[in-house]
Length: 264
Image 1: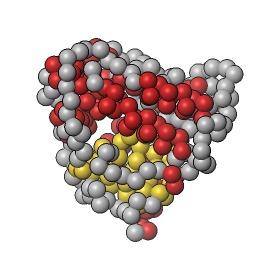
Image 2: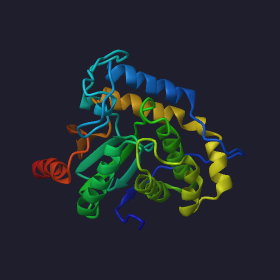
Image 3: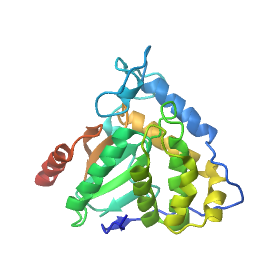
């Protein structure tokens, strides 16, 4: 896949490597996943997924609850964009889209393609920036946490160009719904210039990413996420303007972008 050419805002974390090859799922992230399950969904039956996000994959009659939440969910709770974020595009863009995503969610895979198209249209001239945050839903996709950790390792070891290429490649390869063979992740890291030894060493120290992923999960919930994907559109000064609830179409997202651009 060709390298994206939009203006970039890069975040590098400190590199840590050691021996080891096991994909670890830090306990704090699992706990955060349980928090999400308790805070968003209550269901007594499981049915086939419908709609455009993973909330419906739990059950057709899922009901939102607020167990475990300390404040009312709202787009105003989105944490500001910082040097800890993965951002592609102009950091001073008049429109910023903060996406919370689960790599094994089939709707996220669709929306990832939509966002790439949005960036093709609006990213190259600096009108839109795309912020990617993790929202792996552990009770639906047990592999999603390991995949999120793998992307963080790639960012640490090879930078943001590699992060976005790696993320694109995973979404392209995975059949979704826990269908990706995790044994493919080291080879995919090699494809973006990381040695297997480096990658395995980073994975063995995956606990360094647990706070980042856990905080992202919890902020998604507090920002109004009821499933994945979930995104919040910000104006140039960082003010939350509207939500993208699920895998909305290119045309739907474009209309929201244009409304903000026309109001600037």
